[in-house]
Image 1 (spheres, protein in one colour):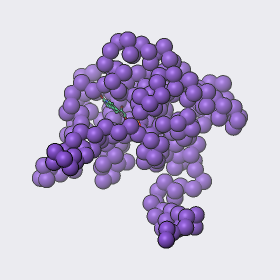
Image 2 (cartoon, rainbow, N blue to C red):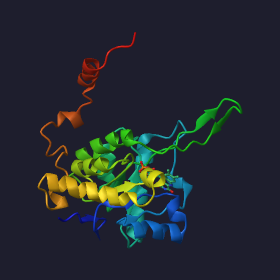
Image 3 (cartoon, rainbow, N blue to C red):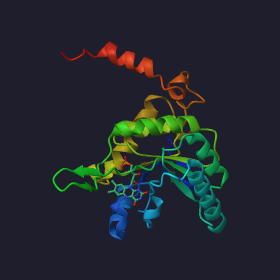
Image 4 (cartoon, rainbow, N blue to C red):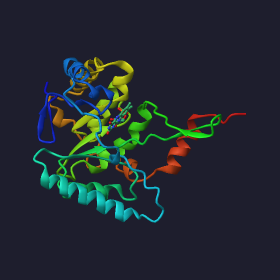
Length: 251
Ligand SMILES: Cc1cc2nc3c(=O)[nH]c(=O)nc-3n(C[C@H](O)[C@H](O)[C@H](O)COP(=O)(O)O)c2cc1C
């Protein structure tokens, strides 16, 4: 069975990558990730300006998009290493911005940046920083956009956000991911969790008679699914009706 994958032009023995986290702060903790068997390690951010919320009401979405694409063009021009761009999902036309970042020369698109929302402390009346580890619920947004983008870009696609359980890794690849980054799951379960991820992927491939990872990638993408409407439309009414069919209303 072959679980190897190509990400940013690099060969990886399997798709599971340790996402950016405090594990990247020290060489010995990075080494722990390597020893556990993660295929690659993403180091933490060096500049907070990667992480911007546009609070100036006069700044337009198109100005932000233009700045982003200009930055990617410039980076890919001056750097000789592949550039992956971790994007926020908060664009009016996410597919278009992914396409433009791809055209600007990015070798990888990482879906999605996860914004940490400040909470409000009702005692001190201060906004307080609040980091919450993710759950599988957050994966669904990633699955939708991986499935939509699969087969349309030159750049590799990586999922980050909500890959909490071994089956989440299978889902991300079925949607179209070349690599699957995980952070919260490592912080929760420790670096050895990669063994479970790999074993489950291999068991799943075995049960579905799939010998090569490339043959399962994108099987449930927009291009290949028998139900594209599930990704294309909000399916709002149908989803609500299905909830109503399965749940009793409270008294
Ligand atoms: C404690 C912590 C530190 C993080 N540091 C970074 C960072 O330096 N740079 C970055 O791009 N993402 C950072 N992230 C975000 C993760 O890399 C990841 O994208 C996010 O947690 C969603 O993935 P997950 O659901 O697997 O946790 C951090 C996340 C956590 C929980």
